[in-house]
Length: 243
Figure 1 (cartoon, rainbow, N blue to C red):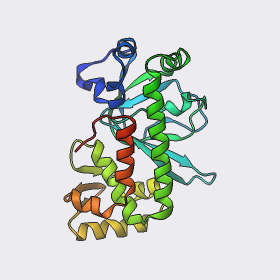
Figure 2: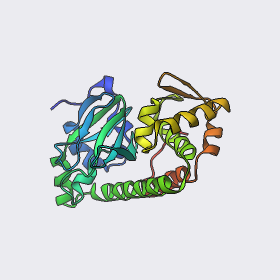
Figure 3: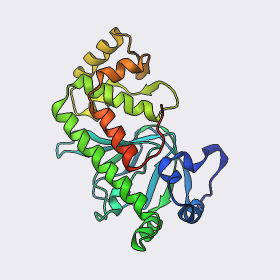
Figure 4: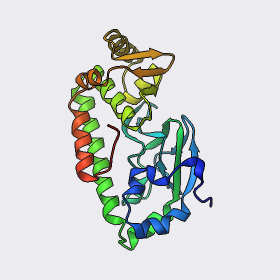
């Protein structure tokens, strides 16, 4: 097992790891392994047991629900605000989603056995894990409501804001096809929204790269789900997100 190396930064750039009690951090820090996460890399599939939990620092991971015919929609996005795979340890024993790296970057992974042991012993990390699991359920529920009631434009704006909260710059690398897969809508619908936002000077789009020029305009175009989900997260597991 690798120890933490300087080029990967501080593991506690991941807010979940940063929120752990010091006694837990002292046990886990030497088991953390730095990893490079490449775009479209699959971290786990549905109905599989997990050997590792992943803690992104600069990467972003999409948790996807797949239908029988192969269609997919994103039910949650996890960046430096959380952990990928915790659902498999909260009584399910296997992952309930497909986890795919949406934005390449770095992170850390931890053997799932270390987390299972903490759960079994009701250690001091348990309250943190339960609060995070609660916030994850809330995010998934908010996404379900958003997909049902709100327009494609509102959902595109919301998803761009989620990416911006985890991005070091005001750029998001997403093609129209990738966006349509995440939202579970037709590619043409995403293209129409992108043209509209670009025409209003909110974004600039070029070959799979979206630059946000007017964040306030993006927030005005999003539905209330973005602000509500962020407030819920901060109440449940208060950790800093990008301004």
